[in-house]
Amino acid sequence: MKTQMMVARFLAAGAATLGSVTDNRRDGPAERFRTPLVVGHRGATGYFPEHTLESYALAIAGGADFIEPDLVSTKDGVLIARHEVNIKETTDVAQHPEFAARFTKKVIDGTEEDGWFADDFTLKEIKALRAVQRLPFRTQRFNGRFPIPTFDEVIELAQREGARIGRTIGVYPETKHPTYHESVGLPLERRLVDRLEAHGWNSRRSPVFIQSFEVGNLQQLRPMTDVRLIQLVDAFDVALDGSLIPTQPYDFVVRHDPRTYADLVTPAGLEEIATYADGVSPWKRYIVSVAGVDNNHDGLADDVNHDGAVNDADMHLLPPTDLVANAHRAGLLVHTWTFRNEDRYLASDYGDEAIREYLQFYCLGIDGLFSDFPDTAFIARELLSLGARSCVAR
Image: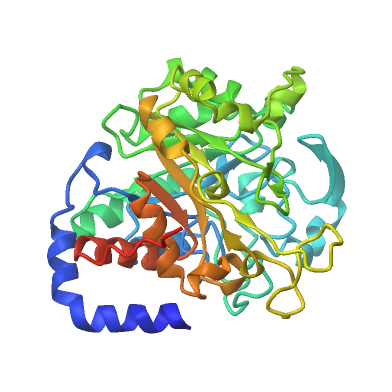
């Protein structure tokens, strides 16, 4: 609510200024976008179901420079925008009796899941489904209204909307579970590059970033395309003291490489990333972590605000790490994720005010971020350009 009030005041006072700033951003290739870049995380998923053309369009209207389609393959080899191969939680497939027999179990990246899986459906069958909101605390009013887009449709939307509003809109696809797709005979890499080529977006100056949580996937893509590649960096969680509990890229697991994502963001790891990628995209806790409070000494973070749940709102910020500086020293861009407006995702230091989190990370020198609320990310960036440089001091 505080963020909405601040945004409303800013829009009321600065509409003319926002218009002039936006005009300065038209017709630029990837390197000419104003930074830090605002990436609509699966679109504008704070408002609409993720990975729909409507969500992407709303992200663009809110000021996003790039829109992010996660890519999985259908049975007939068409790339579609879904966050996971398992479409149980993001579509209305369970309401389609004609697909009841497709319910099954599969092992995805070492974990057994039950549900319906995109690679068991043709594109025609996928088009019979509609998207639903995955998170129960967000509005469900748009469930069942929007179809599942192909990657081609996402690119066409970006190009069409960019031409209409007079500024370049880029795409930031993620290859989802590339090892799994390879194992079922539906490798993503060539299909992705072919679709970019078909739309004239397969050069260094194209407004495209390709991202992956796997390493070998990006190394395979490097000789196939000149577009920018970004190494995603994950962790399992944050420990009570704020240290990160790292996980491994799944292709490392498969080939028995003992390194974790934490190894990739050491100075030596960043130098290695620079041999095959143009940037690194770490979970934001690698840049600014949070720690909990354990007054009852049970080894677990306490529910400080007594709302019945333990989440970021019960945590306090730790001093920033040197990851951004180290990555820049290695010649890498730094794009981080994921920023959300809801209180449960905001450390207590921000006072339930999402704008303050954006300002802190912008002032730390990141080159871009992913947000479920790209309109808020855009406004925070405009506030910086107008001189409101109020980083959270730690």
